[in-house]
Length: 262
Image (cartoon, rainbow, N blue to C red):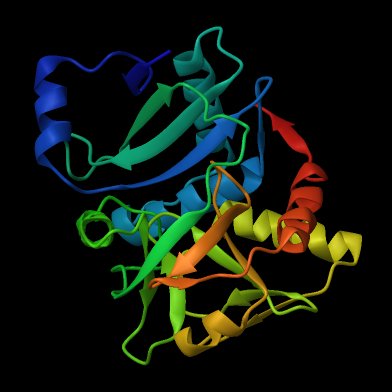
């Protein structure tokens, strides 16, 4: 299923032109299962933060209810789907932003093949937000693919690991899960995993990670809403240790995260 709605209806040609030519806004993306979503409150918090940062507009509880209604309307009768909720400029620049909801097929539940990463010195603008300025990420991924890799892993000018093109990185040092500490997006999946691991007593830490440490780690995975623990096969051509323990720890934590009904 594919559907696109602007403020609860199909956009007209003039609105489509505006959406295609004005690259401004912020968004969140989620996987719907059985008409429910993991971490719905985190998605709303992300949207609220983005609205204050990019539109100088504060969401209230009524706005959250409206977004839920817009998601449900765009889903129609579908209970399994990928959903992206984006706030975009309204026709009137002084009005609150419009809400664009895109619905597509759900991502498979199976874990994708291990990914080969190429480090790229890059930092997203406004790294704390999930926003429309994604050209740098796409370019880094294109460079990675052109050089025989699958995706890009970002490092800062000091060679510290930050985040991936559309995911966070989790590492395993043999004793605990390590999340890189840096200016980056706090992904909803990452936060949910951290909370779940804390509740389950799984040891983890958040600290700066130099890229030179990566080959010393016992395992690594990428984490986002599409897949909470996709194994990393290599970084910059150096084979990365395959460690089922890390995937198992994160998989167990993820399965313990409750769903929120839309």
